[in-house]
Amino acid sequence: MPTNLPLVNPLSIVFLIETNDMKTNKSLQFHYYGLYVVLLILLAVAHFSMNGLPFLIVADSVSMMISTINILFLLAIPMVFKLFSIKVGENATIQTYAKWALVQMYAIAFPAITSVATYWLLRERTALYCYLIAFIALIFCKPTAQKWNYYLSNQAVTHNQKEDTHE
Image 1: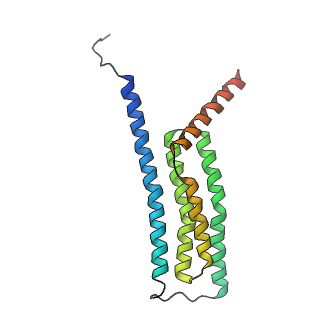
Image 2 (image 1 turned 90 degrees about the vertical axis):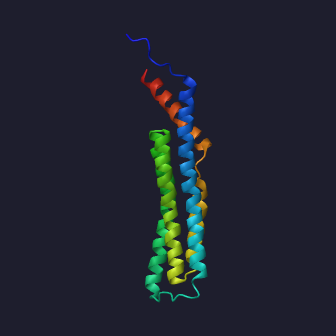
Image 3 (image 1 turned 180 degrees about the vertical axis):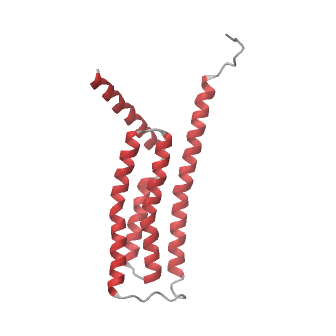
């Protein structure tokens, strides 16, 4: 048995894990704030370019149908939150949290983008309310260390409870 194996400092392993967590957190924060910047730019472009560009003239029934589709997209927001809770709760790791946090953020940004497009193309002010709802819902997607700790500790508690019931 060779005795010249390098010794591994346990503190360096903890530092490596924390460094990976920080990179993941920075990546999620980048996506989170990037979505807000993109949504605000889209709204500004749609609002300030309305005067110069001709808008689509469509029948009232088509306009109503597009507004209904926007509202249906908004109804998906609570389902996205529940899906995130289920998927992360099943397998609470940092990688799972990061993956589903990105899915959650982009799934909630989608209704906002469609609402801005409706506002820009049809000049419907009611689409701004849909945009506002999705914009506010995105606040609840902010990835934080407290959420990570909650899901990781919650997974440990439920795992210990399952082991206790099997004994």
